[in-house]
Length: 387
Ligand SMILES: *Cc1c(COP(=O)(O)O)cnc(C)c1O
Image (cartoon, rainbow, N blue to C red):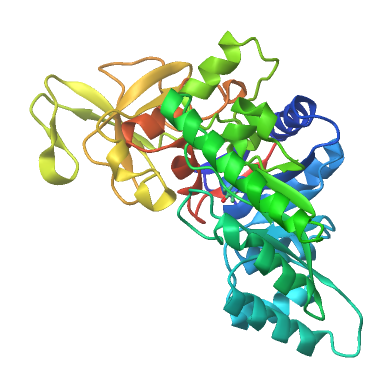
């Protein structure tokens, strides 16, 4: 636990974000916090526990059965939705740990139903499932015109019960007109599916379609439940959403939670013309001093963040030079810099509270990706320290 390269989780910021989300949506709208990928790299258990402190948060969403079991083992009693499909080998654990799976497709529903018959034999227990509808994401789900039939199949089984319906938007993070138009088409298609299930005399249960982006941008599409992920951890799904909220004077604000830190472990003098790192992509244009940092791409500091990456040391930004290695990288602090000493703290990105001058969004831009990937790329080697 003494490694200096680590992630600090600002617990108060996480709680603040959860409170902001709870305040933003109608009190009767349920909230399902996405804690998949270990809470986007932020510790799923901590996130779930803080959500329960904030209160009135009903569901958590994970991507794998193991992630759900981890929450159950930590004493989390909320509903847990499994957002990715499980395979027959995992059905036993779904029943055992009361994990709510997404289902669709006659064959799949039959398989799960048979497994439930086996597991719950002699018992009149009903096991909750949510029906996935693909309204345009092009991922999992049935088509809207198949929903009623599949809902019937679920509820006519001995031990399965439809307790919700779910769809997922693919362009709700864009406020461009054609994309908002597509989101509306998806929403209407989902409404059609829900209505057809009702018309078949079946209760569709808790219906949900919006993740962070639709939660913020499409308040008329919250349905019974919203499923925020990225905003929980203090990042907007995209820059435009952030601007929209400001310009529309929406009362909503979030703070990044995670700071990635390391320390200077050596300072070396490099003469003009010396090259730095693999490939010799950087040549010192003049004499300078270089700080060596014990962090690299095996920690999640992606190789493609350089050139361009800047880290914060004692309130100032300094550029990483040359390629980021697996376990180390080199930072140009300039000649005779009195502000940087060996063993000083370095912040790669983080909230203001950490002293960082950059966020995961800045790294995402450099790596041609999104904050989601920057955060979930942090590897197991990075210990998460709750502050
Ligand atoms: C990941 C995920 C979410 C959360 O998405 P964010 O954009 O992080 O809010 C919601 N629903 C589904 C189906 C997801 O896969």
